[in-house]
Image (tube, rainbow, N blue to C red; front, side, top):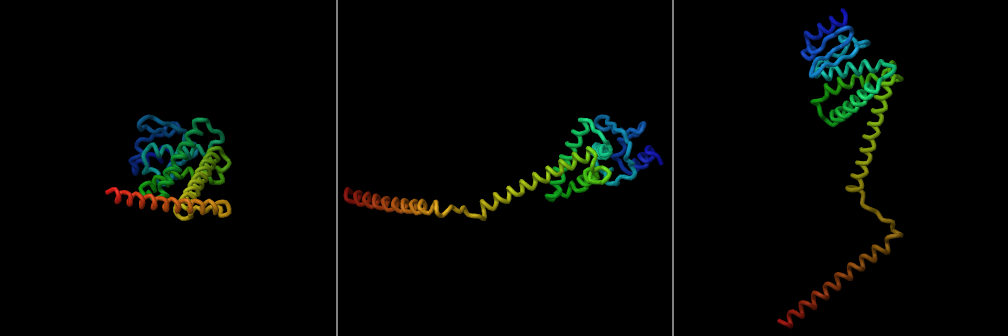
Length: 201
C-alpha cells in the first residue's frame, strides 16, 4: 500500500483527514488556506490514531514537526516554527499538569515530536537540540518560579522577621520606653483636661 492509498484508507475512518491530499509526495492541507510539505519520512498509517482526532491544522503541524526532526539543516522559518510549536506545547502541557484533563489527549498528541526529539536518531540534529534547549529553559524557569514562590510563602506566613539581637536590642528597648512614656504623658494630659473642664463647668 503506497502513501496515497494509506491516506485514502485513513480518510474512511477520520473526518479530519478529508481536508488532506497527497500530490507528488507532498502532503497538502486545504483548510482556511493551502499548506504543503514534503512527506519524505513519515508514514501516515504508522502514526498513533489519536493524532487524527485533532483539528486538521494541528494534525498538519505535528506531522510537519516530525518531518523537521529528520532535517540536518533548517531554514530560519523552520527554526521559528519549531520554537513557536514547542513553546505552545509547553504551555498547554503545564495546563494539563495543573489538572486540565480536557486537553490531555490533545497535549499527548502534540507531544509526539517533542518526545521523539530525545530518540537517539535525532538527539544531535538541529530540531532536537532546539527542542531540548527550550524544554530545559522552561523547566529551569518553572523551578525558579516555584522556589521564589516557596520563599515568599515561607517569609510571609511561617517565618517571623528576626532581627540581629546585638544591633537592635537597645533600639527595641528604647522604642518600648518611648511608647510607654507617650502613654504616660497622654494619660496625664487627659486627666488635667478632664479636671479643668470639671472646674470650669
